[in-house]
Image: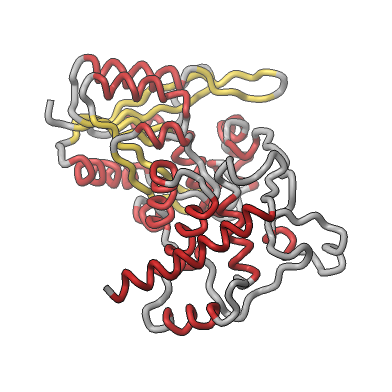
Length: 359
C-alpha cells in the first residue's frame, strides 16, 4: 500500500528531548503540546516518505496500563492510536514492561500484512533490530528518526541506525517548533503529578552508567591546573593541562546537528578505522567547514607549525579516533605509533581538501 505509518517510542522521544533541552532525562521537565507535536510528526512523515499518512502509533508505559491525561488527549486525536505497556516496581525501581515487545509486534504485523510502503520509527532501542530486518524482508522501507543528542553523545543503537533505509534527525529547532519546551522549575508540579515520579525511573539518566576509564580534556579543562598535575590524560597530545588554542576553531564548533548525524552515518558505513584514514577524514571535515572568509588564513596559521597540530584540535582528533576500536586499547589510550599516523592523516586530509577546492 502506498502510504506510511509512524511508530513512536514516547519514552525515547521525550526522554531524549528532555536531556537535550533541560540537561536531564526526566520527562516532567518538559512542557509538551501534544496536538502540535502530532501535527509536526504527521507533516514530517509525509515529507520524508513521500507517502500519505495512514496512522501514528504512540507507545508508552502507564501504571496498570491505565491511561494518563496525556494518553487520553492523544487517543482521541485523528489517526492516532495509543498502545500502553505496564509500569511495575521491582526492587524499589519502576520498570516499563511490554512496550518494546508491542512495538516489535506492531512493526512486523504491519509489514507482513503489507499495510504500508514505509514505516517511520522514532526509537533508539536495539532490541527492535530483528523487527526492522523482518519488515525490510517484506518490502517495507524503514525511516529511522533520531532526536539530536546532547553533548555529542549517541542515543541510538548503532546496529539499528545501520539497518535503517533512511535516517533523519529531529534537532532542537524541530523540537521547539513541535512545541516541546523546557518547563520552569517544577518541584511543586512534580509533587502534583503522581505519574511523573514513577516515570522518572524509566529515563536513561536514572539507569546505572559505566564510569569513564580516563578523564577527557573537557573534564580536565574544568579543573584547576593544580588539580590536573597528577591526572592521567589519555587523549591529549601532551599530558596535563589543555588550554585554548589561539582562536583555532574545533570541528564540533563548525558542525551543525544535521552534519553531525551525517558524519556518524559516514563513519559507520565508510570509514574502516585505519589511523591514517581516520585522521584524514577528520582533517578534511575540519578544513571543509571553516568559514570561507577565514579558511585560508586559519589553514596557513596551523600549517606554519606543521607537523604539530594545535593542542585542543589535536585532543579533539584523538577523541574522535577513540571511537574506532582498532585504534585504541582497552583503556581508551592511543599508542604513539597510532598518534603519528593519525596526525599524518590529518595533514593529508587538509591538503587533499585544499586540492579539491582549487580544482
